[in-house]
Image 1 (cartoon, helix red, strand yellow):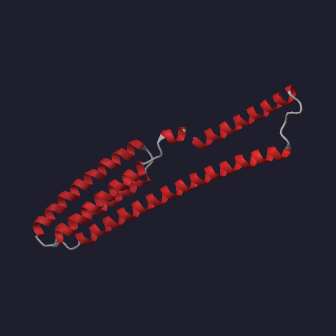
Image 2 (image 1 turned 135 degrees about the horizontal axis):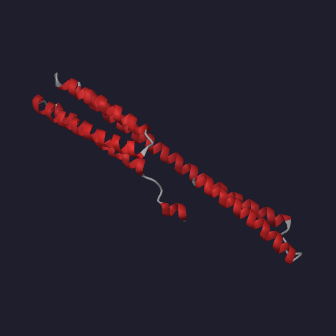
Image 3 (image 1 turned 120 degrees about the horizontal axis):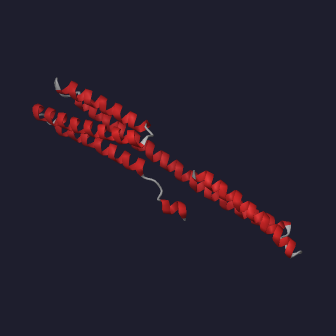
Length: 181
């Protein structure tokens, strides 16, 4: 939408400029720019456009890299949680593994969803799974009593924090004021 609006504005500006120049040339002969001056103006405008495009692509590439890093961070945190869950005895190991698999599935579906309402529903589902995971993790930690439970609870917390950072990165956009200016 932004690109289409910008293109439309450029076309309108071009038409206004051409008509304005014709009007000026009709009313004041001999006041036109020489070809050298005209090419300098065109070069300057094209240079500014190239600079603007460079900044735009740079920002888009940085945003893509940041979001990819957040996805990797979340995947690593969930992977660590899954591996540490395997240290618990049954039935906690199976319960934690099932919840983590469901959590990963919900996060994958959430990342591909574009409809705002479905994304909101998937976010609530993901948060419910996080609550279930935390309850199961606490139950496993209490029944285990080993020193590894603190590390496991830390990985669960890291998984939740990574999901929150990923959500924040997904919702971070340039303010409208920047587009207007």
